[in-house]
Image (cartoon, rainbow, N blue to C red; front, top):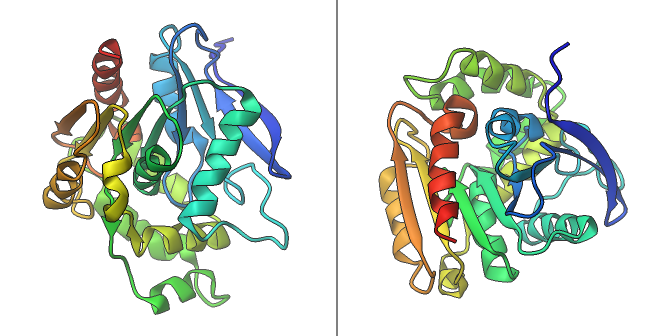
Amino acid sequence: MNNMAISGHYIIVSGIKTYYETNNGPTDKHTLICTHTAGRDARQYHAMMEILASQYNLIALDMPAHGKSWPLKGNKAFSTRKEYSAFIWSFTQELGIKDPIFVGCSLGGNIVYHLAQEYPVRAIVSMQGVDYTPGASDVALAVMSHPHVSLQHSHLGYSDSLIGQKPDSGARDFILWGVSQEIAIAKKGALSIYNGFDIRADMHKITCPVLAIRGQDDWLVDEEAVQDTLSRLVNAKKVIYKPLAGIGHFPAVEKPQAVCNAIEEFLLGL
């Protein structure tokens, strides 16, 4: 039998039965709290968990209504960034994590910037994250949970277009399988946060070290948006930018080793 280090657990956070996974890494070093992309779940971080199992303690949660976590009361999902960020912070507090390092991708990559504005974090790693995403129309959001629309089928081509030209073997299949398992209410709530996300005015509040990772094949989060975001980190102790060629919107899945290498180099300096 091939036993992997990853194990799953449940914890009650703000009254919500919340699922999370950990690689059971060493707790005497940094603990990384990982947040998935809109509509997905903690499995996006499995490869990184395995690669870094002997170096760092990685914890990835399923946000409410996503994956194996319970929804909010009334079968709802979060639809505001303040609720989303506050829940992640409460999760770390319930686990007793001190000086957390937050890792996020896409919406999660945006949210880690917000967390660094609002809470005393050790550092952040933002993948495909920016401080401003203008977003889609209200009509596009509305049809995501319409009974006559299959969110999963309608988003397959869209998600496929976000994957880079040189993902690792099996990465594309895994990403698209994740699309087929999305919960419409959860995806609509998450993209309601992503669309119209704007924390530009408070970027000066971020003082912790920042690692920004961007897959260069991602057409959604372009170079200009990332550079504009980094230009507003005027008080951060350290800002490292790591562009990665050949990958797109899902770096942790497409090229986990490259992401881990960048993170290890970043953490050595903390």
